[in-house]
Image 1 (cartoon, rainbow, N blue to C red):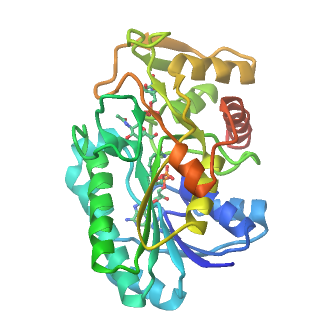
Image 2 (tube, rainbow, N blue to C red; image 1 turned 45 degrees about the horizontal axis):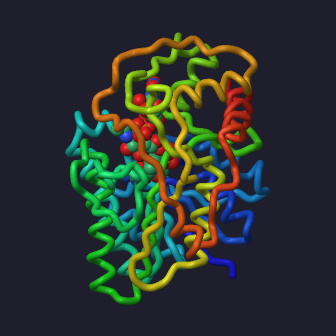
Length: 334
Ligand code: NAD
Ligand code: UD1
């Protein structure tokens, strides 16, 4: 059944790819974003892919009256909440801005939902809420919020807790917390990729900037970890698989709080990522080994069994698909 969905942060990387899946499935989509970390042209890219241009509200979640106005006009069935700041290192230097934007922004959103009777929300959480665990294979039942190394991660943990509390106060409220592992890749049309403002912190956006000549070389942060090739291992997930995870979550929303890991279940090392990129491109990447980056864990990955069993969702794309679509994106956005 077609639903009216408000996508906050919908001109961003994951939000825009999810908007494409929603529109393609026949849902009505409106986007709320302040364009802090995204560009208005993304709306044209969404239209190029789907033939539909979502209604856009250039509104800041910190503008409570503006958010409420969008809800009063929107008559939404559900919200998918992507909007937030996401740079781990920056959050250490600007904790107050991170708590205000991510936590206060979410409170404004929830108050507007309450005022207009919108009872369904899917929230972009992160594997980062697990912190340090005894096993590197993260399961939803593990305790969260311990040993978190940065304010960004704590905003995700706090928002999860706020949503749990609110669902107790309103038993009709339907919440799905999606804990993403490492989203990578782009839409296969070579559109809607991860193109952050400034120098990227994350591995794939950094590789993309080296490949297009905007940065001189990739530094591999540490090759002396206790892993097979000495580099860190992560669970990389193609952004289209991740977007489809939101569709599955929307279809299975129910009263109370549901929590799912969205990952492939398979870890890949930094060296394996670099080799896969070089293989797809047919050319070596300038690179060197650098010291470890502080705060990095040697390895972790998702146990995705719960999402498979309950949402009937699992990843379908692999690292070679990621590299093909990343190269298509680079070719269109040189
Ligand atoms: P993104 O920066 O591309 O998208 C976020 C969007 O939110 C941007 O378009 C930005 O302009 C908007 N935004 C930020 N603050 C806002 C505000 N106050 N009001 C309105 N709009 C605002 O990031 P993304 O990679 O698409 O991530 C989406 C969500 O998923 C974020 O919440 C992020 O923390 C979470 N997440 C991302 C990753 C990742 O690696 N990309 C991993 C785990 C979780
Ligand atoms: C980071 C965030 C995490 C967030 C995730 C989503 C930290 C501590 N955690 O995780 O909260 O949810 O992004 O994408 O930052 N690497 C290099 N060279 C580079 C960049 C990265 O070798 O120039 C290595 C890193 O050391 C790491 C791996 O690549 O081993 C992946 O790094 P990154 O993409 O930043 O993701 P995470 O650190 O897993």
